[in-house]
Image (cartoon, rainbow, N blue to C red; front, side, top):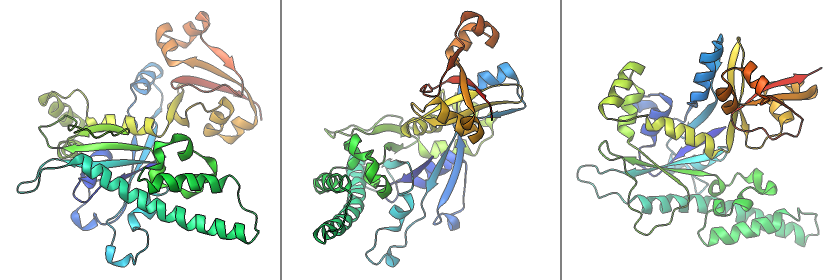
Length: 344
């Protein structure tokens, strides 16, 4: 699962990317697109690893993509290069400037949010208009067209012409016939206000209604933290009276933004968090581990993480009756500890 980092010029996208991924580059390489994969902090994995003392501990992961700076003189009226590159992302992190540079104007973060949304809307509008023109022409010529696709695209057109992102209508954003278009304004968005070192507050809304998830980071401070050792970072956080790095919270929120949950497999060899979409059926969760487990699926032996904590050990959980057997259609819950029974 991949999140694209976007924002207006000067918002601090590179700073945020480097704080998230610890992927620090010199200025000469910052025009190139960059990808970083990071572990999702999860205290449950830490505790399970402490209980089982496995040879390996594997956390869930998310991937962040920072598109390179587009060469505008080469665009020739085509869709901006940066938007082409983030269309395959599953969600977007919109970095918004909320700090003052010496001699610069006071930041206007909500104006910047709307300005970038307009860019996403225009990029999608170009795609919708072009496709509708083709579909209507095919219809006039008597060719078969997708009867579901046409009305959905017309609905998108109305929203976009009214300067409304497609994500504001969740059922339209998730419509199966539209998935291939990867509409930018349909993607889930996390708004990340990039504040200065002394400010950890959300900016005043001034009457603006933003329905996306809003978070604050102090980008430069977090970038410095990313370059420290664990010991140095812990001391730094303590000095600033910060309980947890904001970047950890951003990573956790990114995971939720994608509609993801974790289930666990445990043992002496490995404790691992596996990533699935919310409400995935047990048989499909089994395939995430190995296709053979899905093919030979018999039952899933399930224990909720909280029930294990309450019992203290797996054996005690069995005695309490909280370990249960579930079938193929069981919707896996976040935190389920699963042992799949299968026969190939």
